[in-house]
Image 1 (cartoon, rainbow over the protein chains, first blue to last red):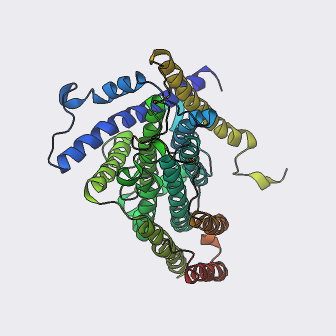
Image 2: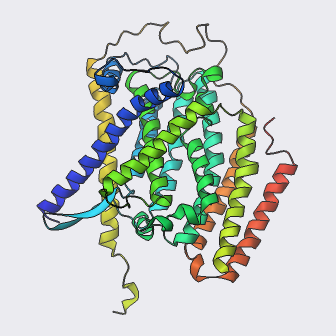
Image 3: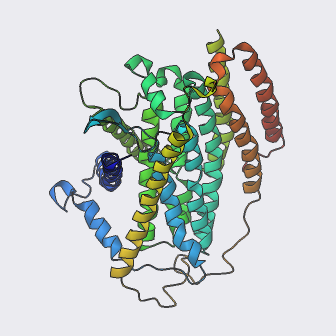
Length: 328
Length: 131
């Protein structure tokens, strides 16, 4: 560990953090433009060329907004809840390999923040903590809509986390390792992608992923028609922005996880590896928006029934069938 | 020294990797705190009693905000704990499954069948019905 190593580490962290924040900012614009396109509108195109400065304008507006804490709220929890929803999401990015390892100043640089050998467990543990930001925020507001939204969110997230975990068990049986770098290394060619070994597992994982990040068709916690804004009704200014950044960062990180686990990570021919990684992640982000523009919202009892009586048995069946095929 | 530990990470390497996670966490916390601090410098702060009321679609808030909610939330939380522990038991089994073979599969099927029986019981009792 000398000066060059430290410099490389700092550079790595700055590049990945900057790329993530840039993606979070431009994801908002991307979503609005794509949704507008799907609905036959134009969308925000006035601020800068084709609306490219819109995210900056939004950020400046939110910075200048007054921060209102409701009179009966628990002030401490109300202040830390938005951070609790944003930081765990950020942590998951740390174990995702974003590019092929390269040589800089004669050092081998792995493009991953921390290459721990239990990457998948780390991701599961940290994504499970995202629910705290939501439930603490909803409870601390001392208001009815946020409380109901928070309860719905927690029940939904724990229900779909079970099938998410069970879907990953099938994947672990095939790969035999928890390490993200090794899983990427195993998928060196197109036909070795894990999606071909675990098609049902991937389907369960992507449904669980939509539910974990509270996106349509699973956006019951913030159902505008019944709960105003759900758990973030009372939040304003940067606290509101932090919830939104958390949601978009969660979408990006879960897309990156799906790319890493099922679609060969950064591997791909001709183009450089970071480009491949971004292209694959971008395809999933487009899918998130596309689904939002296409599907209506579930009813709450349908959501719970689907999670427990369809996804959970299917996930167990997936483990069973994977086990049988591997023994044969 | 026997080569029991050959091919494994040394303690330093392992904690080294977790240290990077720690640095990443610190950067995240720092980013959030700096953003909040900066916003608190430039934003207006003019509270008044009406502004600080809870949002209830413009009406005066009625009754306490910590209202009673459906007991079903607790039941789902309990079922979740059972199945989440099951997932935890499945992970180590899944990782070494390739070298265990048929016996491990049958063992795990017995374990899963007991839990599937539990799920069927909960279903029969109506614990999984929301309304």
